[in-house]
Length: 166
Image 1 (tube, rainbow, N blue to C red):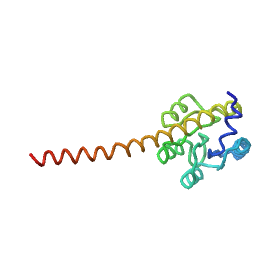
Image 2 (cartoon, one colour; image 1 turned 180 degrees about the horizontal axis):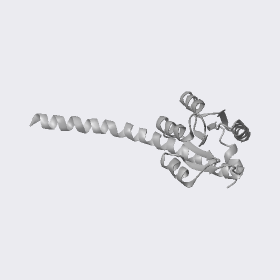
Image 3 (tube, rainbow, N blue to C red; image 1 turned 135 degrees about the vertical axis):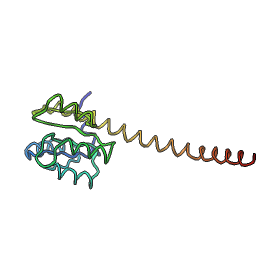
């Protein structure tokens, strides 16, 4: 699979990049913009929480360690606000314990800095597919409920009528 082709077709994917290192955040933003993504970069956890609450982001790439609000707080807030969002954690000070903790709190993946662009592309392609799958499942459940709810109401009315007649 050619990851460049997959990445270039995802022009409708909105990404929030969060890193207190402005060079890293801007580098990621420029790289992903060049791949056709709509990218917003913010430079701290507090900014990320505000941006996520007012924006429509499908994927969040967030640094684990930031001075104001750390990446775990951002991760938890994003997952609580939009469970279909996909969060990728990045860090220069990662341990296996912190990676496991992030994954247990809903992070999709955990990438150690410095990372290779190819590694990011692979993770990002999978993250885009994960987001699409989560959205499709939500739509399907909605359709199921639209089909099942009238049937349940009808059964309830029939049972009520049957037992009322006894």
